Length: 372
Ligand SMILES: *Cc1c(COP(=O)(O)O)cnc(C)c1O
Image 1 (cartoon, protein in one colour):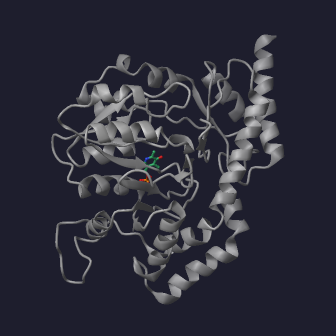
Image 2: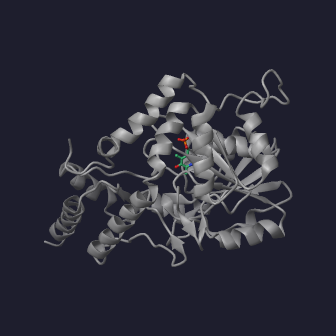
């Protein structure tokens, strides 16, 4: 194994094996493998955790956003505003509803949607804004809510990277009409396979999502609308239930590591560190720095057995999948420059102090060698 992996899910399982195995065994013994009591238990706990009334468990985060848009009737020709810097799933969910993703450039210090550039993209076809709480930090929700109210738009939060992130005392997912979560294994709260959820305060919406995830049906044999199969399975719900108890402690550990990185790497080379706004409590799903020596630094770290990542090196407007939108990179200067300079360093709750020091020292070494 490398000296510093990007994350360590094996260690996380070892640390909580007894609790997780017990939850899985209960599912195996019950033979209730899809939805069922275990999913209900998790839904209740996660709704409480997010400070909302309802949580509907789903098969993954992409289907969460897709169903959220479907539930409010987004259709062919509608436009949905999303940040230019995000994982492709945010845009795909829009496209899968035959609507058009409208990209907005990001803020250079937080990499979150630039709220000053949203209104110029709004027209009569605009229906929804999807703020993405990228890397674990909440977008500027007060401004987004103000814009949405003024133009009568709905807000769907993409919380795939923000389980437990806080904005002015409010949990990610509790501020828009819906909050969409992914529990992909590598997220801060991760299942042992694919999983996702929608949280909402709105009962009508919660019921609609419950129908959409299960063939338009809540009552057996009765199909009120054409739905899909996007149900959460019970083993995943059990794993998530066991892990949810530790989420706050894990997020705190990530914050401590982020602070240590910030202390150690400030002023090193041309590194720009991620900015956390004072009213935010970010959960550091990723710790993303910028340097114009990105490729060389990443190679150097990898040679020294330190894993790194890129989130995201090819912006969505430049992807083959979105070629038909004919967008120019000139319209997204921040995302464009950033895509060439960003580098994600390892960060995970089980990361040791020695590992953090090792990464910092190798980065310092890299920039020292540059000077000589
Ligand atoms: C992971 C992720 C998703 C998609 O979630 P899946 O569970 O992988 O489908 C959506 N948006 C963002 C920002 C993500 O990071």
